[in-house]
Image (tube, rainbow, N blue to C red):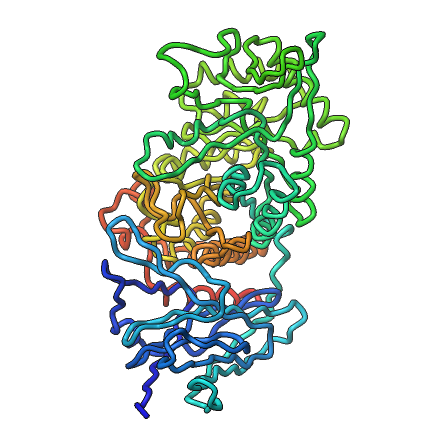
Length: 578
């Protein structure tokens, strides 16, 4: 019988396996010293990665069920983790980035994978440490068993690591002080999972995605209140098959007497579903302010509702002739908005409602839109993702949340710090999207960049983070998620599984760790340890001049890209706070 040689090593959670354009992995990625100790707090997670490869093809099994490869010559290696905590293992799948090479990203749910000879397989290890765990060092072990066909398993080899649990207890997500706002694209999920929009089957699909949002710490519900408010992200210009249109959650009927009736059932059902998982701090309503005009469907210069200062599309069913139509009159849109305001008032939700605007860039037309909205529905408060600090003074009487891109935060750092201090009653977040190239959450990005995003939020006195994506999938994201000219990963933090649930990613887990860095750093502030807070941040922040943060040619001149730096900072923060 041929001798089977298995190599294995452990790496930190922020490691990202790479492969070339032919999907081959470099065996040198196995050569680093094994990662032997994961440090965590209580009510926390200890995550790391297992890399394995062998001199011949084999099957790698991560559970106790039998697995027979179609090729009977493949030996089966079963990995078993022995730990005092709940432990999960998942195969990592690679996806292509824009240059044609590959990066590990998705955590697969199927426990078996067939590994070619001399190729590296990566496995994500996720251990959950309860809040009542005693501080201390806990030994863990991974055993590898080998079997061929129906012959008995034999112990092949084993490896050890430990979990160093510190005394600090992390708060639950709802109490962590970090306002995470990831926009949700429910219509895309209906398309990807091939279910009717707002049907029971659609909500069955939505539920595990909502749970994954809550597990990450998302605080905001995304409600869409008019048709295609983002103009489908101009998907009609994209070379990939990618239908990205989002549809209203509100049904509208026009009776024969000319009056309108509104059905909020789907919208409220989604709000309630999010609340079931603790996402209830804010309800962001899109489609009523700074709507992206549907230029692809209108001749040049034509405006569908010329007597209203925003280009929203409100579709209704006309009972008089049995046809679907769109509101053309400003007074009809006013009535629609007024009725929505009254619905939120009577249902006791109005204080959590924020009418959301996406990247207004010119003050005057945006002012007209908000003035009309405020005159019609004065109880509505607003929020905006924008790039202009002067919007704060201009709209502070109407808005409670301002979200700036990281370019603005860095380039106008001192000015914004003064703005934050002058408006202590407002919430200030920041975001990254299609840019900058760094720091970001692209598939090509270092995973420690997501750690840095949480660290930088604490440094810049921001209260949270926004990203426009979570499930903006093209037609085949599992094979190639590159969409438009954007970097892969710009559009999603998870992937759609065939069972209707989301596949989490390395980037999802890294963002969660980044938020926990924020929690630790904010705790230093609360304890008055301002010098320690600054010193901790500058262990990974490489520039005093914030104007250079995103403009350095080499990102390593802006922040550390060394996983070891972040692991050391993480351990030292937990030591200081325990």
